[in-house]
Figure 1 (cartoon, helix red, strand yellow):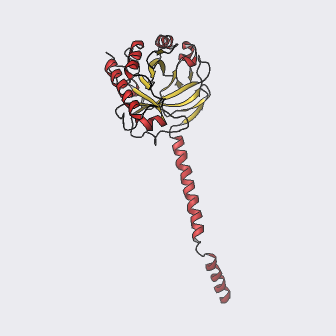
Figure 2 (cartoon, helix red, strand yellow):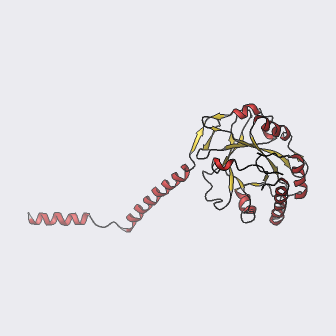
Figure 3 (tube, helix red, strand yellow):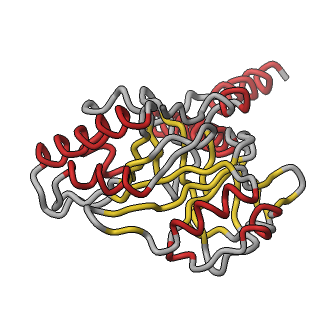
Length: 269
């Protein structure tokens, strides 16, 4: 019996031999993978993304203020229907309207859209599509000549999404000139709209004093893109639906608390 116990004990000891290094590496890899999946899920859910059938897209319901941007590409809008677009506690709280482009172009739906947004009581803002081929002074005059802002309107926006093969320094200089003159005229700091590429290439480090509106459709968060920047809006989808608009429309979200929304008003003189 004694020998048997010894053998059994020896067998047990042999059974509990330490894992080889390869085995520990596999276990460590599994643990890291599980941790990464948990981290990814937390990042994915931090903005509380939920599909909202009314709008046909997922919305980051962590935030309370949602809106759209429109131009002549959205054709003739039924603003009464648009104003009433709502799903439970989510509605369309603001609209940015394309006003001008370059030195002479006026969006053919701007005047109607601008007036209709005011009539139905929607919070509105106007944006200018910047053309690097054209002198920025002329683009300033185009916008000022077409856009009369009123108290309560959102700050003007410069939309930078084409470089027209111009040198970086020329684009940066022109954009700065446009922003400075627009701020001097309306008495409010303009917002810069860019996608990820243009943000990294032209904006980061050059326009740190200006609020941003970033476009990023494949992202669930912006934490690693512009963590130190003053980002006001996030354009997260170009495939949304809204009553009164035929076809797709861009959706945006205000990335701050509702209390700060009231302060984001035009202070034009």
